[in-house]
Amino acid sequence: MKNVIYLILFFLMLSEYCFSQIEQLEGPRLGVTILTNGSSSERLNSNFITQIGYQWETKFSSDTLGSAFLGEWVLLVGGLEKGYFIPSLSYLLGYRTIRGFEFAVGANLSITGFGPIIAIGKSFTFGSVNVPVNLAFVPSIDREDPPVGTEGRTGSRITFTFGFNSKY
Image (cartoon, rainbow, N blue to C red; front, side):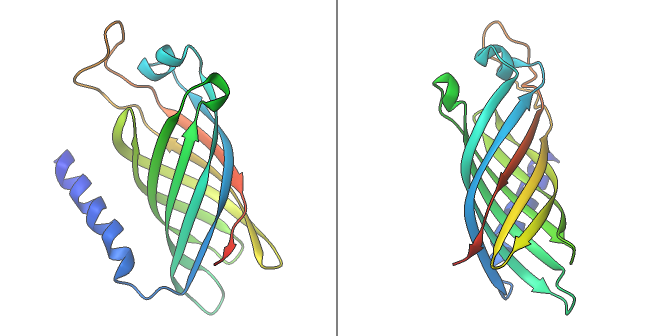
C-alpha cells in the first residue's frame, strides 16, 4: 500500500507538465528545522538546524479573483552551521487563496528516507515580488535498518522557511 501511495505521488509530480502553466515563480529560501527525538537528532546531537535552499513554483490554474492551484519543488540544505551537508527535496501540490494563504501536501526525500510532507503558509506581495512564509511538517519514519545505537524512528521535522520569489 505504501508503494502505491508513492507511485501516485510520483505521477502527480509528472502531471505538472500536462497542465497549462499560467505562471512560474522561483527564489531563495532560508529557515530553521526543529527535530523531534529520534535517530536524526541523535546523529546531529541537536534538535535544531538551519536551512538554506531554493524554490520553484508553477501555478496551474487561477480564477478571476486570483486564487490558484500550485505545484512546487523545494530544495533545502541543512546543518551547514554544524559542518554538515543535509539535503532534502520536496514536491508539493497545493492551493493559494486570493489573500495569500496556502495549504499543500506532497512527498519529501531526504537522507532519512522518503515520506509525506504537509505545509501551510502565507505569501505577501510587494509589487512584483512575493514573500512566502511557510511551516512544514514531515512525520517520523520507521526505518527497517536503523543505524547502530539508535532506535528505528527518525524523528519528525518541523520546518519554518521564508524567502522571496518572482516571475522568471
